[in-house]
Amino acid sequence: MDEHPGIVFVEGPAGRRPALAAYRGLDIWQVISTLHDNDGDVADTAEILDLPKSEVRLALAYYADHRTEIDDWIRTNDELFEQMETAAKRQQEAARR
Image 1 (cartoon, helix red, strand yellow):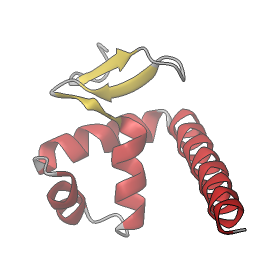
Image 2 (tube, helix red, strand yellow):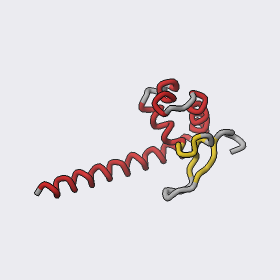
Image 3 (tube, one colour):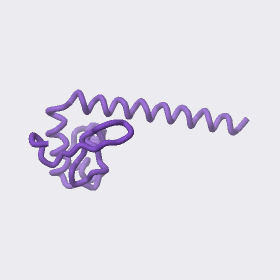
Image 4 (tube, helix red, strand yellow):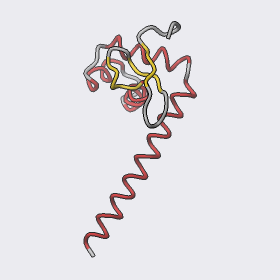
């Protein structure tokens, strides 16, 4: 946290993860994933997440130094989302028969 002021670590069911200190419900991986989805546009990402651009830049600075860690969080989240989506489709199909 000394290296990256504005970043804190939060505990949760998925483990310890970095988050924005001023927005504790928003993990760094979420900011970076949104940034990637918006072609690296800091202003668009800030608008979508309703954050100051400075907060997006804090997340980006952390990501630049810990890229593998954040990419792993993004990949894990994407995999879990796909699993949940597949399960929901199976349940919808089962409900119709």
